[in-house]
Length: 255
Image 1 (cartoon, rainbow, N blue to C red):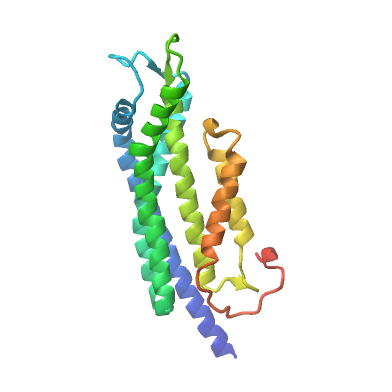
Image 2: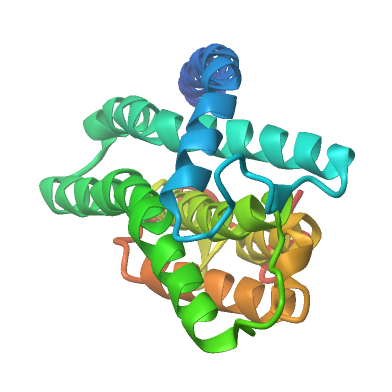
């Protein structure tokens, strides 16, 4: 019995060491990406503001920053969002290498599909939001809601925060989907429901409610509900590994 327990402990310790290594490498990569994007972000935002169909004037006299601290917050948010988006493919590669030896071919194929969806399509969707979606949105708003008799001035921070909020929604959805799927693949399941499921959903919805820009006021609850519901529905399609221990019935009381 002691030999079995020691073997299980050694196996668990090895897995935790692997997870710790992945987390450490990801932290270093994230820090490097934050430094990288912080150097480039001002020029990129300036180019993007000149790209969208907003009449800023020859010297940008119609484009102002009404709250300097708001602009600092938006700049920091863009750096974090860009770093997370860039890191998603790297993190997914590490996660796949860690998970591959313990998965059956069917589980491996399914994991590849989810990682491709979350770490390839999502970054491409974020790029599409900034390059295609947001300009179309502003063009529609200008054509249908602008009074020609009024001089229109734009807040650069608010204009940027709209695209930032849409990108942040996609990032949180991607991370939530991956986390929920991995809990099922690794066997953290009790009576068909993954362990910590409600906690993950609550954390994701709370992050969206608290961190979405003020331009999304009135839609925070709806957006967070749609994100967690869609992530949960996708995660339920993942294969489930059999648990190796007996769990109590109330899985959300497990610490």
